[in-house]
Length: 164
Image (cartoon, rainbow, N blue to C red; front, side, top):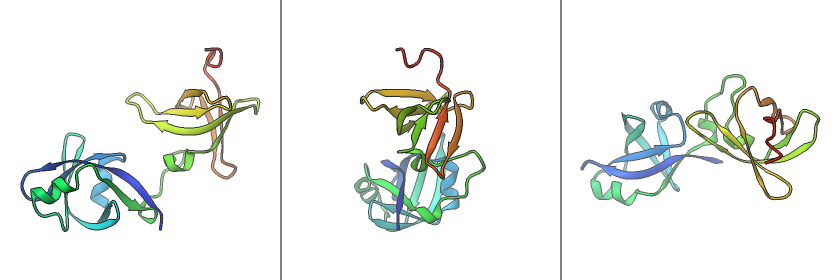
């Protein structure tokens, strides 16, 4: 069973064991879940609420402030089977990491090292063969095609990007 990192507990909230979660996923996603892992231990989600973009969870087995504080700085996970089906042309970051990246002519640019989720748009962090990093905005203007079957992303580079 593969676990997917969903976020990190960053603080305790109140006295009844609620935890504040910095979410790596869409915050509304937590309403759809029944169970979640805190590191290796599974917990039932008893309640979900929000403070702006922060997720506040009440988890089974964490019933007071001390328990919530003990969970601080721990990562939370779901199992891969709990991931929802994505709409067309939408991908999980975990599926893009490690994919080969080629330009319009088919020349290799490197491999996806990470996807940086930025306020404006995602940035694809490409590790070049020489070890240097290349950042490509994750918009249709530059990301031409993503083929999960052959694990390849075809891009159109912004003019002058490789000369920098």
